[in-house]
Image (cartoon, rainbow, N blue to C red; front, side, top):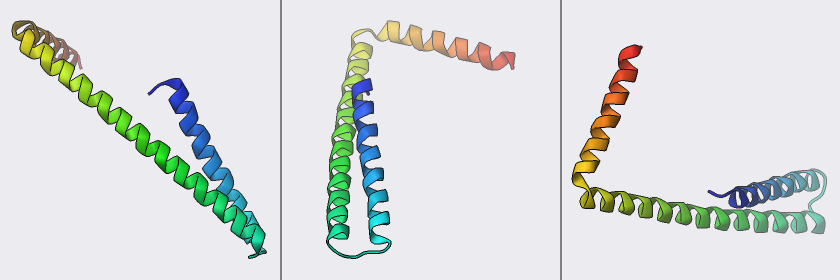
Length: 100
């Protein structure tokens, strides 16, 4: 996830929290037009944040699939190198565990 995406997500979440706080303070003593306006803003913010999170989830899923496809393609194209790399990683992990 890029820094800009993370920042946008955090901004969306901050907006949701701010609107939720405004909703709570506005409805504490009143139930008129002001409360309805704040509720509408909060609902809109929540919906925007939800849409943004769904979009990010789909983007991350697509990136994970692409990485898995690339890894699978590399293993099919270079089976012996893949076996060698896996064996080397296994030896290193075994040595690290053995030192404990």
